[in-house]
Length: 293
Image 1 (cartoon, rainbow, N blue to C red):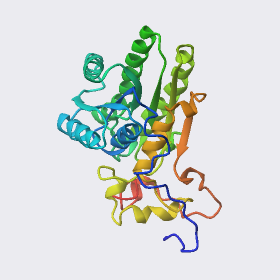
Image 2 (cartoon, rainbow, N blue to C red; image 1 turned 30 degrees about the horizontal axis):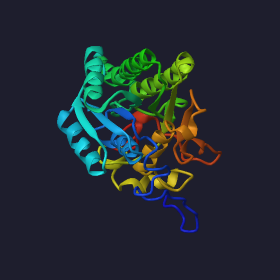
Image 3 (cartoon, rainbow, N blue to C red; image 1 turned 90 degrees about the vertical axis):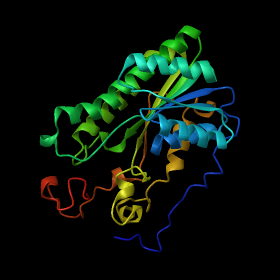
């Protein structure tokens, strides 16, 4: 259903108007996993806007390097590199490379992930591992490598994790991703407790729909506009406002916040009511378990 014309829809400022000073991350280096495209690149761009040096890490070296060039065009020092976050030796080597070129990594954005719709009974072991290991193992390995280095230097830091708003409810065709994103949220709280004495803050954003070129929502027939009516805010998220919130949690402005999972979904998770469309079991949906193919 289209959003009625009389509804007031709040929109964020344009990308060129970030909500923090251009030097708020000056002298800091952020490592962004899965930063070559989509929401990871949005994180990287937001940190670059605040003056951070940015290490873009991804399995696809060409994408990571292309993202680094885009960040350099914004005026940031940036470096792209290849890494499989499931492998601890590659994670350690990536941190070594980033620190050799850009300086000590003081901030970490965990975005690396994978997802595709499939009913739970049809998930193969390989498919389960492909989704859960990247998000769970990758978040743990990158975070623990980061923390060990910060603790050894006697300096603090900040971590932001990209979770999802369906961690409390699940989502049709998403048992693998829901499990992985829930683990990320739990790790966020556990790590925040463990590392608070070392002034290492850990938070997460439980993101809703932020359609972009590589997202399934972005490829939905009818485009993002076809999703607007189900979101109380009247629109899907703009990818740059996700990046801004992620980066904002790492600024001194929110220095007192740690162990929090912030929902950023336009109120989509609040829309349960007495009057709702009939429930159609995922296996019976003509458009697939997510409601589209």
